[in-house]
Image (tube, rainbow, N blue to C red):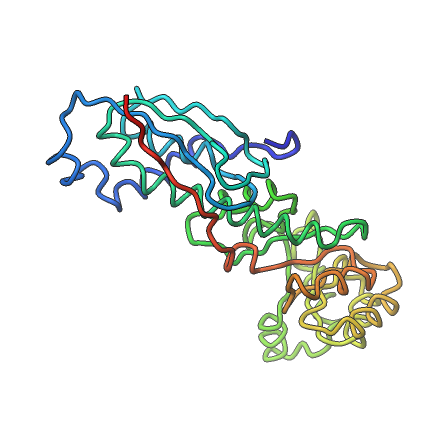
Length: 290
């Protein structure tokens, strides 16, 4: 695992995994109970079936050990490693019933988190050399945000605010709500947020045009989010902001256009698809004879 990425607290992992095991009926696996004896011993190997970046081995391990704490889970790779088809990721040994009952949950987590890390790495590689950082968003699976943000970091991306309490981000609907109460201009909205929000928080506002970007910069916004702009409009906005604020671009970002966006001079690019649309990495658990 990359040294710069702190691990997810074990309590967070275990809470998420236990919910998944209970949802899957892992402690009442009728198929395994019908076919395996309690004393039967098993050994399995987690194997990569496609190329990608691994994330979530500790989560997969918890899916086994929370069923039976005598199960051993020996990692053969580490989070952040690039893998190719056939690479072995971990050896698992213990009661056969535990391996069979925990298999699906372990794979679901590992495939999901590795898919996020893999897609993130692709975006990070696409902007290599520009100095731009790729950010995640709050478009995460409910209840799994900490794990999915971890996978983004493992893939080389960076994390935006964790939740609504972490920072002031004035989006289009906040602007619409403010205007319903009589606060019309971008500048007035920024100034109101500055006057009422905790002084320790930076003020970020979403804008849709270069004119709004210039207005937000003049009003003293700390971060200006350029939403769904073309690269030309982003470049014009960056020029008009003139380094008076940090600049983030978002909306409609793909692997095909992220490089062009990065070359406009923005500081950050936030990409919702890192967590809401990442395809799962193909992995499998292969049982071996003991």
